[in-house]
Image (cartoon, rainbow, N blue to C red):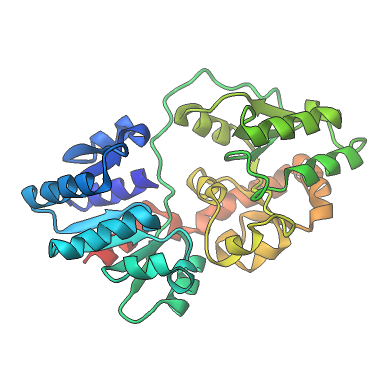
Length: 342
């Protein structure tokens, strides 16, 4: 997400300074910024805020963009800006579009942050409908990533790989239903169908899921990883897959927000690498997915996967659907992003 923004700013000749926690810094950021400074979370907030505003003043910075415009840290930063009478304009990414109407903390942030980005047109429609007077909302798609460096080619031995990106989070992804459906349809699934989980199986939730997969004796259908995958391999494995399965079903806790007020990282990754999606039928109302997705009811998931694994023409048609998605071009996304800053 941050990389996409830095690309947009660099391409439009903005002078960009990056203030970031060293733990999340990536070397790819450096070539897109004039200077990188590091936030120290162990320092007192007041001390860090003073340091940041000195940095802003000394570099003549007129616009500040919060990569995440939520939470108490941003709220306190905004309150401090009032104390020192900063004339900066504040912008930020709104990851949960309902917050301006439901969160007092967000209302405080919005006292000075009058310009918000959201991460899809669907979320923008919601945010604009409920935004308060004086607040501007625009969307962009954070779908531009560093090109993966060459790795030893991942061999898939002719497997049909269904990719499930992201951390192992059962409140967001319906893993256990997937396992149960595999058990139910085990006699129908070909040995070439593999489900690749790109989250760390050593996490607390990962271990529980790993144990469940082995308990149900369907481990041969899964490709799993017992450590965090660095970006290069993570991206390579998405490229190597045939289709993205976000696994967002009505049964999961966070299903409703993904339809209106937020996006899954799996969506951005699919758009970025132009991979087709397998999505629950509820998502067919979102225009972004039309022409590049196979929709299903939960109980039909396995039959849809079997159909796709055998129908190369259908899969090719979904891949080709991206040719009509001009909105995902760098030019259009860059233009939309920069427009809010003017």
